[in-house]
Image (cartoon, rainbow, N blue to C red; front, side, top):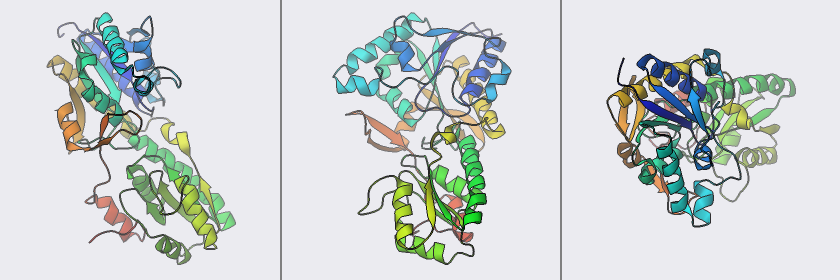
Length: 363
């Protein structure tokens, strides 16, 4: 049994499947080591509250059956409460950060395990003073797959499965009514979710923010299709010159104008739900184990990352500097580190070889 430690865990940002797997596996691994786990509820909301919203977690209080469920048993925060964005708007970011720091110190933690996406990790890198006196180990989770330096993020695989299943059901009515469905995938400015779910469902067209597309060629691909029904997958981050609105609506209007029967579809938060797939459960367990090993080694300001089949830790400095660093659209002065679909992603060629139009690929 290793030296006794008191570790905290919280989930932040958007929810996804696999968060509960991470939580349950961290508790399980900590119990083996004789450590105490403190769960912080609702992310920074719980830290900002008085008293701090936190309690001890045990294998009994978080049973094994909870590991498969979507969402987070700890919660990811509420709308309309004080957070980084709200504090920045009213000029109280320093005060907000100090409160978070004081709350963490009051919990007497050795290490905090932060389960978050690229926004949460970028905030952690920018506001290191929050974690002064507490070691920080991060686990990347997001359905967007926009975290640099990791080949997988907790929740992504389940989101692909959820979106694929949704499209499978749409195909039944699409065939009955000789109609195309324009399905809008989440992903923000990264098209990875649209790409993988599009390939899985056999979409005739996949449109992503990373690749420019020609609407005339989209129309041509649909009109020349061997069937008069199917799926057109569009990532929410795409743009169409001279048009505004939701991505699926923009494409749907253009198809209608071209005489193509279609309907826009918005699976929305269904992509964040669903029983966690085995692949995501294995990833969550592996990353939880990697995080616990990092704690044993007294590492701090690191993130677990899956690279070429091996889970390892990288520094948050590496995470931030390697990605595409851009201004955060919600918090003035904050920069976030982002990953996108690489032009070398082999799935792009797979899609093209299957006859899918994905935009104007450069040779």
